[in-house]
Amino acid sequence: MVTIERKTPGVYVEELAAFPPSIVGVETAVPAFIGYTEKAEAGGKPLTNKPVRIESMASYEAYFGRYDIEQTFELEAVVTPPAAFDFRIYNPDLITAGSPSAGWNYYTLTATNPDRQFSLYDSMKLFYANGGGTCYVVSVGNYADATNGVEADHLITGLAVISEQVGPTILVVPDAVNLPSTGNAWESTHFRDVVEAMLIQAGRLQDRVAVLDVYGTQYAIPDGVPVVGDQVNLTTLISHFRTDVGQKNLSYGMAYFPFVHATVVDASDIDYRTISAATRLSLEEALAYQAESLYYQGDAGSGGGPYFDAVIDRIAQITSVNPVDPADKGAVSSLENDLEAMTPLLVDIEQVIARRFNLLPSSAAMAGVYTRTDQSLGVWNAPANTTLSSVTSPSFKLNDAQQGDLNRPVDGKAVDAIREFVGRGTVVWGARTLDGNSPDWRYVQLRRTLIYIEQSIKTALDQFVFAANDGQTWATVTAMCSTFLQGLWSRGGLMGATPGEAFVVECGLGSTMTQQDIREGYMLVQVTLNLIRPAEFIVLTFTQKMGE
Image (cartoon, rainbow, N blue to C red; front, side):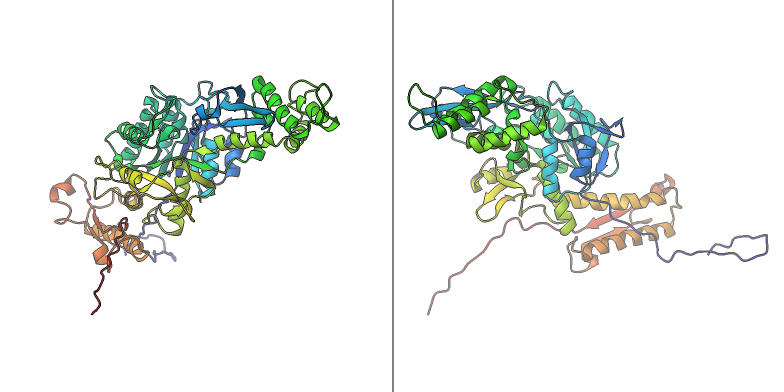
């Protein structure tokens, strides 16, 4: 105890700490989402390019709104036989109206503004569906202002903003896959620039990782299948992605393939107004064809019957006969309900649109899986072998051979697979970083556990800056770090039968420092860890014993 010289007689109270300095573990799963939003404001004040901490979809919608209400689709009649259509993801789904006796009429759906696709809002729903919690959101602009669609400069600016924020541990940019292509439909130098910015930030700050999607996934087809239109064989697509990620800070990046078919957008969220006003006559025509096949009862030259005529009149309210005011929500809802009941084709069209909206990059779902795994099992467990929620299927069906090429490539740039298994649904089936050739940083949980330990100890040691660089301080630091690591070991976060096998903490003259280090103001702490590695390959050996 330090003796304090007192000059005034009296009673003095001194409080002594009962516990030595300790380390409190930092949060491990706090994603930062960067992208475009419907709005960005709170109390009338703009929030564009400002990190906002949120806890739920309700708080997201309060600050940033919902989906892009201006996204519409064009319904166009075609005469090409169905066999000539290329049924790729994001390509128009074929709509058929008519009947076998009267003949079929074909229609396709295409996005009115294909370059103005924004994924953040629906990705946030997927994040929370898979266990997401606290996160940060940076809005880089409003839908209405993004007349040129997603721009790399906007996303990179958002990344720069979040780099100044203490707390995020995961970078997620779902809109990166919506950047315009430069060359083939499945390649984009803009995407490469955004990925580079994400990995540079993660490597520089050393407190976060970057979860990446594969640009152009919607165009992937199996190797050996002839390429049509914008399609690309799987090997070519993945090879191009590996070139895009470069060679730096790979242990801080992890990529997932393919996209997923989600259920965050329901067909009931869509109505006939999602068909662009310019092609609503085609919608009226298609519904009329179905009404004719269902309700027409007249002979040649006569009317089709009173019910048929009533249905046709109601359909015509989409465009011409006493059209419904789009601003009148009650009238719109009434017309929508009637049309769905009278012509199931409208439901089919809206389900096709919902499927298009529900094709989402998987990075946000994985951010939710990271959060769920950390909370239930600990950051030292692999965020894999778990089923994705609100997902019906992956967009590309991988087999074992295809995943082998993704998981263990020659250059080590592993891409983690999302696969569909009978009886289990859509499962995360990989846990490697992009630095797969490194025995130290090969696995996602190793990199994230190291970040957790490093940042927890680093934050706790801030209190010793300018403290006396002597034996008492060294002993305090060593004990503090050892207590923290012993707690981690006791929870299963480190390998070893005893704490001594799990970790070693050293700090002192002659062990980690020289006299010259002390003169220059350096206090060096060395921590050696025995981290847990996953049983990625389980081999069963069976031996047959010959009977006597």
